Length: 79
Image (cartoon, rainbow, N blue to C red; front, side, top):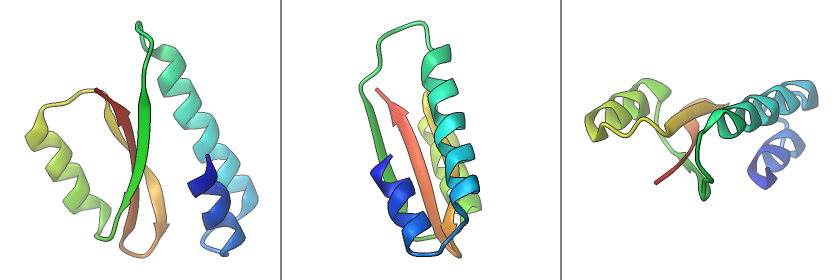
């Protein structure tokens, strides 16, 4: 969750919100029936653009975690 910590430290959102994001991501991973190799990345565009891109991939294990700042969207998922 280094990217979440970095976003909090940079003032993009409150520590409490960062904790909520980390918790939500953990719940998604725990809910999986299989062992996951996870990756997270940020996209420099609005979350609506990222959501449409994810839908086009038809990959159910890729999720938008949140927006780190205006037009910076955090995504996580697995293969």
